[in-house]
Length: 164
Image 1 (spheres, rainbow, N blue to C red):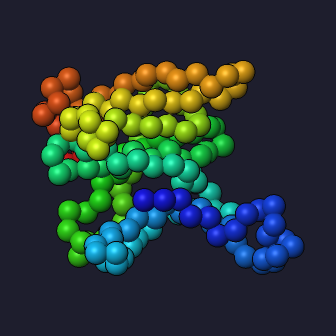
Image 2 (image 1 turned 180 degrees about the vertical axis):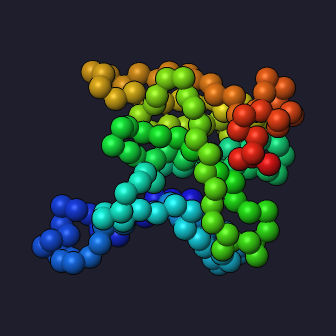
């Protein structure tokens, strides 16, 4: 998963006149060094209204079931959303559905999440480390947002429709 930008606004007019600046969140499945599937999860062009995809991370909520936590840039600041890929590769053409993540304290900048690869257990609790902007030194804060309920196996909480 990565962010793709068609061209840099600082050099577009000189080297790529007329090319639209478009930000997109891309996803690919690679098997045996071959791209098996690729799709755009979110995109926004410079003349379009809406949130611009900025960063994204996978978060495993149960063994083998991952969701995507994404940061979008808006005029009001960063916005976080939760999305889920279709379960079968044949469904990769389906439109992504994004649900807002209502953090109590807004975050900005780069964020990291707990991952199974990093030694954390799958969980409906999302723990993030965030570098806060506007401070003389980057300070890391530990934030937690519950995506389900305090019981990590109960997915009936407010964001459950996005993670089922």
